[in-house]
Length: 98
Image (cartoon, rainbow, N blue to C red):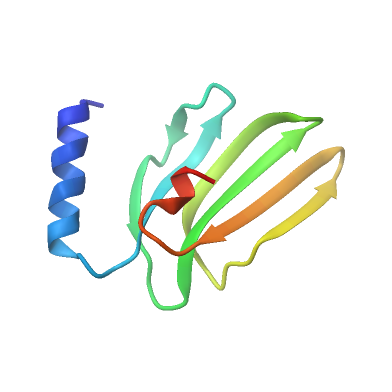
């Protein structure tokens, strides 16, 4: 996607909804650090925050998922030789960095 288009797109969204929490979305981000499905952003509703779920096998990131999540909480657990790390944050586009 063209970087200039993205910049205009994000600036437009900041002007329209300056007070709402905005989060990055990606429904399938691969190990190559590329979003394959659902790239964009969401505007958090009441009781929502930005969330990232990262799935590791060993110490290697397999995939991640970013969305607006209702009643989000930080959580880490192991299941079937994989580690799931669920992180939440509450400032604009913060789930891009976690």
